[in-house]
Length: 212
Image 1 (cartoon, helix red, strand yellow):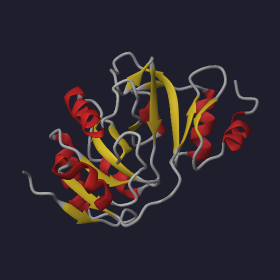
Image 2: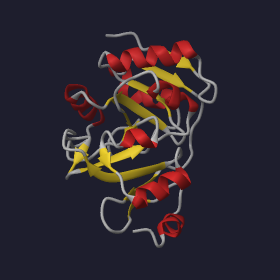
Image 3: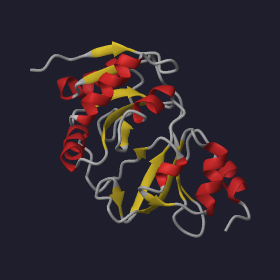
Image 4: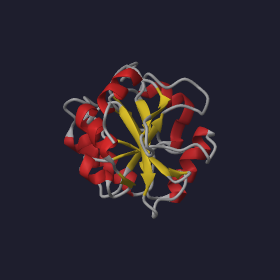
């Protein structure tokens, strides 16, 4: 059995050594639980199919259920997806922040990051995640740190109860019980609501009103 490693972190002013530790673990194909601006995420490198397979088995999540990727900036989104005027408007209004944009995926992306030709992309407002993503050259997945079908974890220790030593590092930023991100499909001619969260769909529609 591996030793379970848990570290306290201030996600608004994260310790550089802890960020580097998390980045090295992710790069080596290991899993990390850490804070996002909404809830705790189970993190993995998003370009490694073997690691993603491990993550999905750990969560007991069907491979047909997509997982979003985090990138550092909107300009980086074009590496993985086709942007459009609607996504441009939403990004300008709400990103970085708790919004997931579902866009047409670039052809090189594979399942489960790409699902039905689409990919969900997030740009976090969390200084911790921003720092972490700045230290790696691949997208990072951060699906909710819970077993599939269960409520999200409000704390790192709650996530630890679910995943134990299958996760190499737990970064504890205290209780996180904010709303989930809003998920908007803007891959077509109109925006579609996948999940309403921190940003209301009414505000999303107002933002893209008149945008083609």
